[in-house]
Image (cartoon, rainbow, N blue to C red):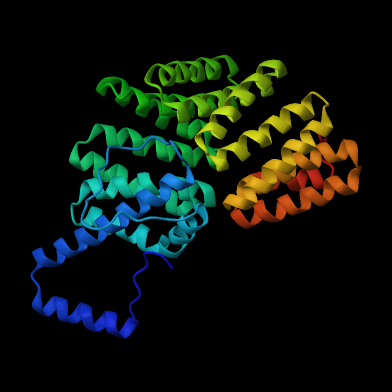
Length: 356
């Protein structure tokens, strides 16, 4: 496998003992710093394949070794999976050694991987470590971005009221320091919280602010996110024409960026709008495409969500059994991930929720 150190356990133990005997604390810390730098450089290269165009905290590669090259997204994802435990441990150890920038740059580079694979405990743990390091170092931009990362984590677990205050703190910091991309990111998250709490007008205002900033700065990825979230709000409000327009714009941006993961996400919600419009054949087409992409990129949560909406469309076109087949598959995935959406599917399957 690309870029993976292999070391037999007994040999590793012997090497550790010799290092302790022969090297000073300064030498060992310098060696660890180099290793963490290698992890960060490699994670950075892998992350850029998972979500092309996503903004990150300021970072420059160390230049100590050839830049890692992954042939495919699958290679990048496989490396992340293989090194997941080491990357989490490296984040904690960097913080313990006072290597503050590494302690927040690693979580920033790992955000996409943890999001894609729904590794929620790792996501929270590393971002809390990065947040503490940022505060200790007095780096307000890193603090704001770690806050937004924790807010994104909370959104995935439906902790909307709790994380709204987290996003508000991030917005305030970014406003104070003039970080417009960071502010747009935090506004997107805050708007999504407002939508989940059914504060629709506030949600629209937040997303429109984020969209305006992103257009002014030319931040195409964030434009796609803001438009996607606006589409969610409009769909929840029943403004289906506006929802359709926003989701189509978001989809086009994501296709232009080559962002397959979020292309699939946009297709899922476009299908949801088609269901609301009772254009069920169009919905089936969107969900079948989004399902294929989710499986291609390894987005298990997205796969389950596509199956859920596909079931809603198939209920109208092929009947109850076809729908229930999709919902059972989705329930299995959501349950395995520990996702709160599993409860929705159980209720739907037992008939306590009507399909829209």
